[in-house]
Image 1 (cartoon, rainbow, N blue to C red):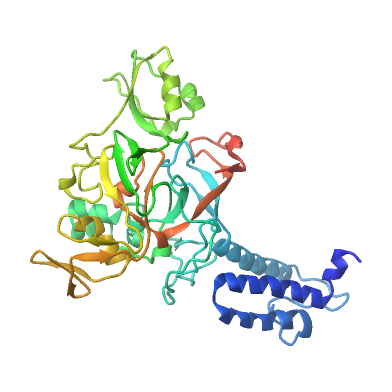
Image 2 (cartoon, helix red, strand yellow):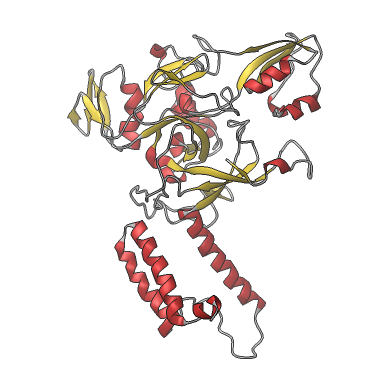
Length: 447
């Protein structure tokens, strides 16, 4: 007897799906879902209820309806793809160059949710195949809001992982400038002016903020320091990843470097401009390997890294660099030391370090925080310490001088973590026309 014949036995088929379903319920950890076994039993054996009510049952010899067959296929696809998106894999497109030359603008990824464990949907009422917007309007309803809960995954976030997460500052969005950081606008020109210029504002749940992808450079409990662009964790200099780019000033003899030469080198031409007053390129994003190659070009006189020192140049003023206070004297290339908050650890609170933890306490961990006459009150009680309820991470883009990351908006909470990029299945270059825009060498590339 073949496997196909065995599977066609209704009891074997019912047992197979029942076992898979029970394993899923155990993983989910909500045993009320075991009531679904009644549906599985009836669907495969007794047939008392037509669970797939949209599917037409044909009599022998009856002609099939194309419309009904398409409807059945579409509904089945929506259910299956939605289930896969929630618990296993989700498609994601790289929208910016912040991770070049590791991940490119136009890379289409599959993001693994199994690596760190999928989150149970906090905002389940969402139009299928959308994240937060459809036709210019929000594509979800907050009528039902679940508490954060993450299922068991293979491991926790590690230092050096590329991670997809919900943008922490994306809980408030300017409707006319949705890609911008509302809180930067608020710090720069004030709340009323920000709303007048870019509003009205839209408030989104944590799981419906925009998706970002960066590299985790520090995990909970680490102490991070950036010195001259290099990352140190707990006093140890970290690996310089092959795709990590810094900005360089490239001085030439007065000639431009051939565009095709730069493209072959792997540069994003849209980010490069030539300044005749140098003469050369004032901000060319290069990996260490690219920098060595470009030094050998006959028209190049010098290649020097652009390292920001205090006081930082615009736009890296203290208004843009976390924790948004001039007392730190930090820049994007000389930053820290900064301790990354860890679940269960208690810290002393004072006026000096409160800017580091204010958003954690008030927003991510939902406490009522206020300051009055030099005293700190949490949920109405005066306090001089705080115990963190979850882990936090520090994320940075590999394109270090063209990345809005944790240096600009602070820590990433554990409940904002979506998954780990697993596979590039398609990659297109928006600066070229079809078919030259397809990056064939990045098809099915593991991250």
